[in-house]
Length: 178
Image: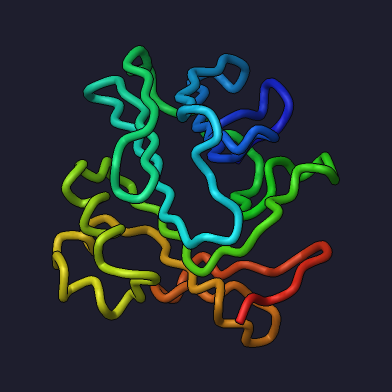
């Protein structure tokens, strides 16, 4: 949910230098960023990426393969409820060059901050963790889970949501990973 000011809410994306970036805005115009270390992403290798915002504690955290790789501890104002669509694999709806160049198999969104332990459990569960397998590692992971998209299910060119809500429509130039 990211656009030009004043339509910013949050974004998790990559930079051209293979860094991860997680940004949150409380006003729709301001930005609080958490950056990973340089060159953390490796081409052609399965990796688990997580981003957590905890308003009560005021932190943004980035995770790669179950370990924290970046943070910011100065944001406790909340997240702006902008009017942009929620996008997976794309940065903004108004720019054609902001597509993720890679493959994704799953994406999940919670309306609570996951703990370091929960992020680690998601990563160590294997590649990938399907929705119906969450109970085998930690039943609490389904608590406050808003959406869990199986991006490997290409039924009718839709990104299916295993929670039967928030289904998406595939747009642009893409191919399903098999």
